[in-house]
Amino acid sequence: MHDEAVRNAFLAQARACDSLGSPFTARLCRAVATRLDRQTEVGERILSWPGDVGPSGDSVPLRLAGALHALVIEDKIAPLVDIAPENEDALWQACTDALRFHAAFILERLKSPPQTNEVRRSAVLLPGFLTLAELTGKPLVLSEVGASAGLNLQFDRYQYRLGDLAWGEQSEVFMSPEWRGNAPPNTPIEIIERAGCDLNPLDPSSTEDRLRLISYVWADQTDRLERTAASLRIAVEKGLHVEKADAIDWLKRRLATQHPGAAHVVYHSIAWQYLPDALKQTGETLIAEAGAHATPDAPLARLQMEADATPGGAAITLQIWPTGEKQEIGRADFHGRWVEWRGWKNRA
Image 1 (tube, rainbow, N blue to C red):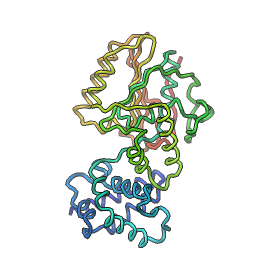
Image 2: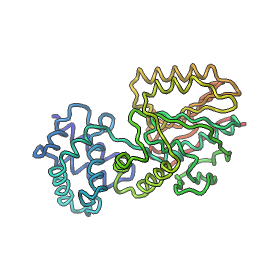
Image 3: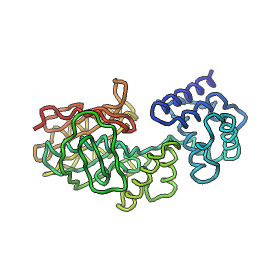
Image 4: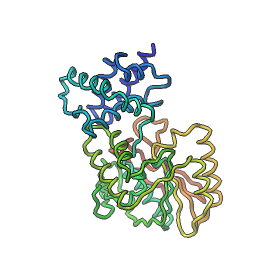
């Protein structure tokens, strides 16, 4: 029965990869689902996995896909993505060889969850920052929860086309998601402070951490690979650093200080949902209490891109204190491929 649960988890991940534009990763997951056996130490480990194998649990399919991609990046195995789709036997033989001859590396990588830092989410978050800057007329103080390597902490260092709006200086990273709706406000943004936290932050200047981050980008999504690599180069150049900290403890510290003359924005993208329910509630209370002490001269905001009960993408929500008004200002694809923009109602 457990073998069946594991195989179903790989099939579920395959369907998700198909919907998110990675036919190769979907093919890889389907191959594992149908052919993995207990003849290798890796196969035995995966088929005996003690917890929830699937995307809402331990994400074992993506742990394995990332480990295999890392071996390709380090030239330990030939690129699996180059194997023709019709040659399933060759793909599985290459996978079997990797499982057998690189078992120690793969088993080590299976111990920890995937770590990603989807840069294209900056194109989802930017309209929220633009709206906040327009509504408050103030420079921003940034606090990102679950920041990973911090690539979305430097959203202002990228160049964008959001519908009819061109925004940002010339940059090695350019993003132009499919845009639905009116253009967001065209407002200058000044950032006077930026900080982020993560339980296991990745250091852009670390070769090992860069490998880890890039290996979890799906191997057939060349644009994502190039964008991530370029964003990491910018992060290294700017000395970007994410603090290793528990989200709630870090928020307590960040929210303890007001910033007169600036708007402090707490934000997160596909991160809050992974906190245990008790910690989420504590975090909600912390932010609301800080909001109760916000003033027109030192407003507080919370910008979120998180999954909700509505199928088909994530909700983009913005809440601003001292009024505490909260609105869903749009929806977006989880990887930022499209944005459905609604904007702030009754915008001044």
